Each structure stands twice: as C-alpha cells, then as structure tokens.
Length: 162
Image (cartoon, rainbow, N blue to C red; front, side, top):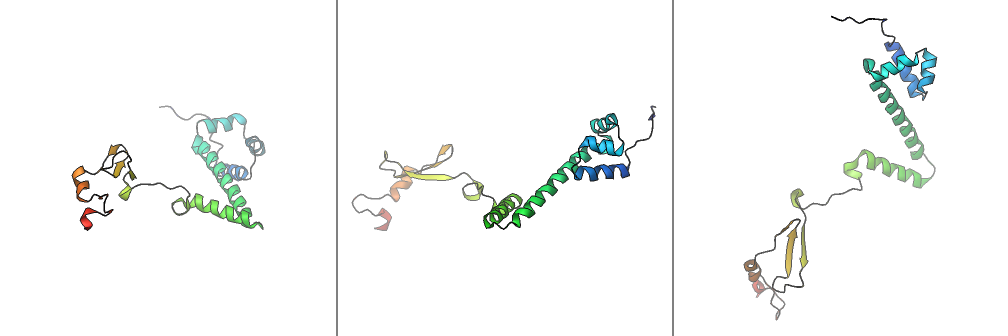
C-alpha cells in the first residue's frame, strides 16, 4: 500500500485560525502568505485539492466577511439622520429577510391554487351573454343551463325572478 510521503502538513488549526482572521480583516491572499511564511505553491496546492477543506473554508470566510460588511452598512443606514434612507433601508431589509410577509411579489391564482377563471361578455353571441374561460380550455356553461336563468330583453329581469 502507498503511504503518505513527505513532511507533515503545515496547515494546523492555529495556522487556519490566523488565516481566517486575516481574511475577515480583508487582507489579500498574497499578503497573508507573506505574513505567515506560506509558499505560494503550497497555498495553491491547498486550494486546488481542497486540502483539509481549505478551499471551502476560504469561500466561507469571504462570505462571512461580506455579510459583516453588509450588516455594518445596514446599521449605518438604519441609524441615518435622513428619514427616507431609514425607511427605505428598513423596507428593503424586511422584503429581503421576510419575503413571505413583506415581499412586493405576488402570484395570482384561483381558488385552492388552481388556474384563474376569467369571465367576460361576448358581443357576438347574444344568447350566451357571459362566457367563462380557463387557461387552455373553454368551460362555457352549457346552453341548457343558460336558458333556465337567461335575461329576457323585455323585462330586464331573470326568468327565475318572475
């Protein structure tokens, strides 16, 4: 069986902790490498093979840094002396973090999430004044059903009211 050959890894928990702190402080990778004495080729190898999850850690730390920056901006905006900025930032935060309650986006559906049913008058068909269509199919009432409740032109009332 093949055994691991070479020196033990330089990537210790202590070193990883220092790298994390520098990444969160916004240091460039080259500067971190120089400060900690890590050869560029070693760093590149750790990233390329994702050695001990190093590449994943770097991505996570960069995301953590961006979230902290965004939180600071949000704090500055919500503490602003300009009322419009405070209101707009609060609105944006609510729309982003609690989309279900505050989102501007809405979806229109019919009852129980089914397709919407549209009703409109059809000028061409005087015997069937109301037609109903659902997306993709015609679900107009049957002519017999319309006869029992049709409007008489003379009275202007439904037959069933008289």
